[in-house]
Image (cartoon, rainbow, N blue to C red; front, top):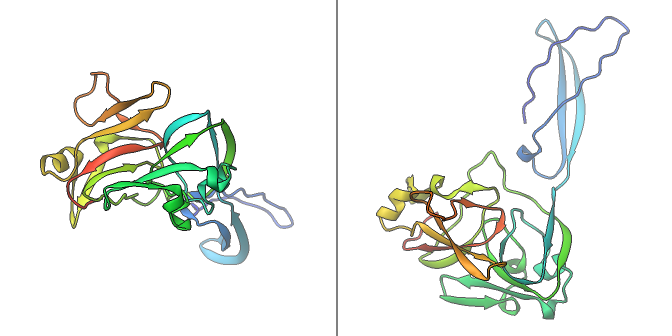
Length: 232
């Protein structure tokens, strides 16, 4: 992480208070050792070692009882039943595997598959309301975020709110717009998300707006996407 140069003057025996602002998304969680360089007329006067401790962010998660398509914007080192404080044998969760063309229930998943990851969507049925705070690691905002797609349907999610039509699709070394990817037969340009209040699906379309369709992908929601080719 870089800090912009700051100019100031201080006389002998005087002190100066300096406040540094760092973008924590550029740093991994944990302790980081840095140096503050004090210059005078472009000459190094002193090098002050500093330590910065970055703690993983916490996101609130609140939901009533019902059926939901969910995707978390952070990687969590806990399994879903631990996060929601539900006994393992009572956890009602399913993921859809495009490779196998079927649902996998929670009891079938390996421990690592049970841990939420950005970009991965799941079905969850809650018998009671849930209110908790989840600690995890988000993707770096300074780097492109990619979701691996396989031929067939699968449930995805996003770590940030984005407009569906603005996303890019990559296949091998080629990167094109969503519309071009649809024209080439890589992906279907329509997504579907479950509205738990309506008890029905809603369509997300990357085409012409103004016809009552959703246009943005929201954090915490899961979306069905259909890919015809292996791509991102």
